[in-house]
Length: 87
Image (cartoon, rainbow, N blue to C red; front, side):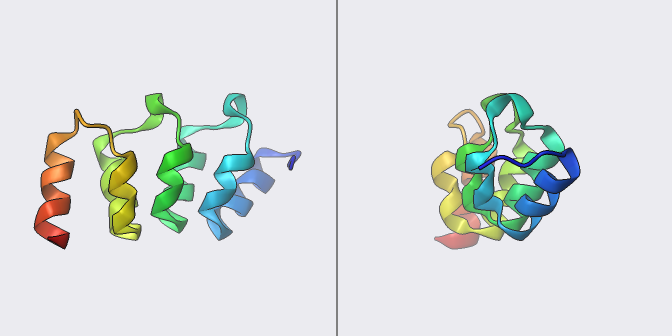
């Protein structure tokens, strides 16, 4: 799947965050990844590691608690937040 413009990619991931899977790595941006996890937290799986921040991870698990699977281990406080919220 290929979307020609940045705006088109942004609109697609806003509607379906999992669409981030189809976007080539070189075209993924922080903004695109943020919108994807807002739409569906599970899309954190397809976010480039360099874009994964604590804030982005918290947004993703608020959107979908199962996104915790893709939160980096070094974000211990995010894992702690998840346990408080969902256990």
